[in-house]
Length: 189
Image (cartoon, rainbow, N blue to C red; front, side, top):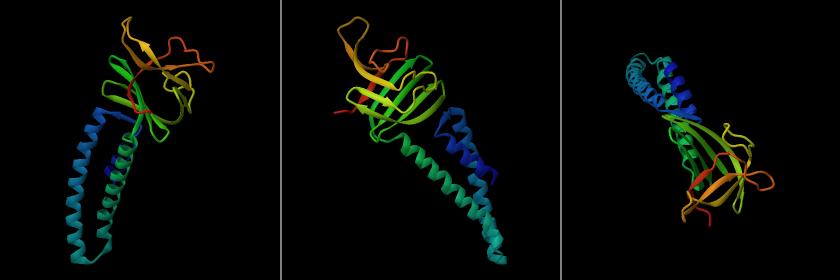
């Protein structure tokens, strides 16, 4: 049961943060747990058949419950992270970075990551033309305003320009030295 609780907690935690080493530990413990559960399953079913005592069915049933719970939470995490994207923006900070994935259902996933680690924040947004309004005024010391605007930005003095998302004040003026995000996916019509 300890292994079941550990794996359930870990798969739940993967919905809010991800560390590469944690996933290796998770899969290692999951393999050990499944092998132990299969061994216990066969042993307890054999004892149940010979004694007809229902207490030998408890561990197999609890194992099925944990497996169902872990698969259900894993499926929920997967479906939340893989909903259709309306707009995705990204800031590349070399060893770290930040992305915001605005989903078509009015939710967003803010992913602040560095080498091997991601930290997710979820929320809701509203979009009106080029302006996006978030449900939070500050996120992870990166977002300083709940108002964002997508505009064209000239790239390094060249004739090339790309869509960028800027943090703005209520009056529409960009916030100085606030993180700017390059638009990497834009499915707006």
